Amino acid sequence: MSHQFWHRPRTAEADGTGHANRKVSFSNSSKSSKLDGSGQSRTDSQPSSPRILSPRVLSPRGDKDKDRHRPRSQQVWSENRAWQRVNRQSEALWQETPALLSPNSPQTPRPFLIYHDSFLSSLGPSPTLSLLISDPRAPYFHEAGVFHPPTNTLFVTSNQIPDTSPDAVTTHNKTIVITKIEFFSPTDFTRDKVRCPERNYMANGGTNFRDGLILCAQGSLREPSGLVYMEAKRPHKTTTLLNNYHGRPFNSPNDVVVHSDGTVWFTDPIYGYEQGFRPKPQLPQHVYRFDPATGDIRVVADGFGRPNGIAFAPDEETLYVTDTDLVHGDGTRNPTRAATVYAFSVYWTNDQPYLTNRRVFAYADTGAPDGIKCDVHGNVYAGCGDGINVWNSGGMLVGKVLIEGGCANFCFGRAGEMWCFGEHKLWRVKLGDETRGAILGI
Picture 1 (spheres, rainbow, N blue to C red):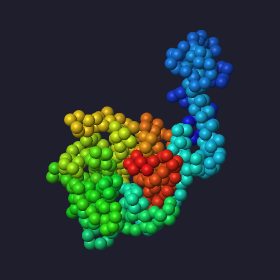
Picture 2: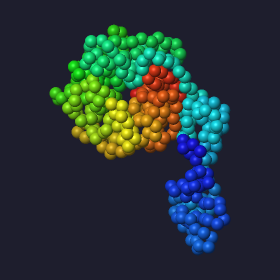
Picture 3: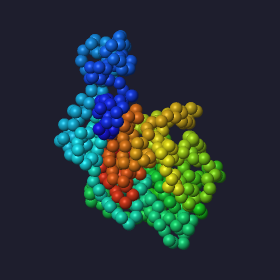
Picture 4: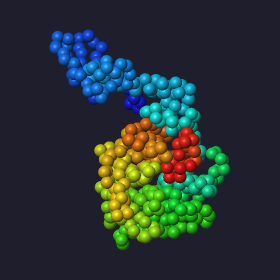
């Protein structure tokens, strides 16, 4: 039985391990053993005084007065059967739509996993996953993911590519390429490279800003790291917005998001140092807020293993930050380290924001959550080791888009369109027309 879907509690026999599920108790069908109201087993010879539940706890179906006096074990059973019933209703749609995965299907898994029926409205009537580009030469599709609507252009940064040129000695003989893809239709496009200017060495995350985009310049052993503004139209002129924290060099800025007030928020892990193209860190791994209008730069969050993706909720009252401490820049992985999405509440005092109420929003079950975005409905999407994971605003996993090889980052386009970056592959996902990215809202 797959762990990927809602199921009723399992008996010891159904579990296959010989152990009953200790988290959820339920009535045993055996005549020799029953459950009392507290969920503990008893034999028929033992006296029983069923525990009466509070009237606030009701079964999702049936007579309320009758359910009110059921033992707690039976109450939990009823609630779980309701979830099972919801899944059975969804299964009719799974049968009609081949792209969706039924939890009882013996076939090869399809791209879309349904953990909760609320994900169906995001998927729309006919979701699709298609491969646009597969390029074995280099991992051209890794990070950033910035869609520029006026030119119908998608900008993507590559992963590190070997570089034997003399200048590459300062980047540990590696380079990063910016690719731009101009779309004429969903499947008709041109692809070109944007030459990285010197000040933009090792570009990583990016986002829309003014008439162009901001890129995180991770820097090199010679060039400082920081934030660079790049014009979306040729010749793609660049301007350095920020390259130090009050005289101290950043580590290697990784991802960035822009608030509606024009301020720029970004993460700064030490991946560049671990990968050999940045000097020894001189700052902790912070989240920063930069105001281009005043030049003010300040720390808004710390205490991360490797702060990575960053995104605001649609109302901008919550900030999400991913921590990819699971994987370090030297390639080491430790499953006891964070692969976590943290949420912060954004409060204002003296006309300035600060973050409070740090909490675990979600933990990725496969790989680590890297890039993160929200849709206009408040759902949270993150690129993980198995594709795109989707949580609702309460932190409940509602669905996944399974992508071969995983997905580091992604980008929303128009009317439910997403592009997902799988290193050597560029994928296109089409969700429901009303599932739009919160950054652009188109």
